[in-house]
Length: 92
Image (cartoon, rainbow, N blue to C red; front, side):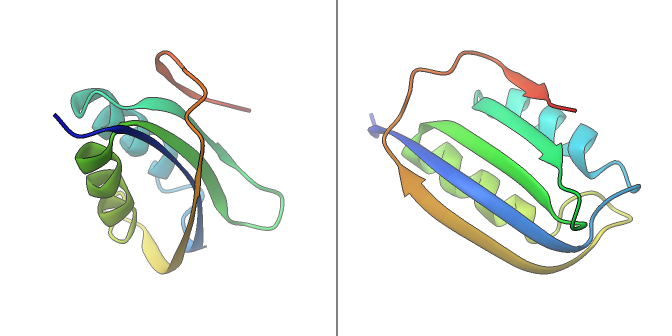
């Protein structure tokens, strides 16, 4: 089994007002990923994905497409030490 990892992700483009957060939450829950997602004031979406390494990598790849109405320009990911987050939520 792959080790547990954590990625702090910033997504830029047309990613607000297009159900990006809800789709991220639903996909993360399907993949067994813990963490959160929220909109930033500068128009980006910020997320933390924590879980098995392969599932976290899948979520980062998913962010490049995101919700069907999104137009993603860039995805930045920084890896951090896992913090034992449980569940996945949308933050406001």
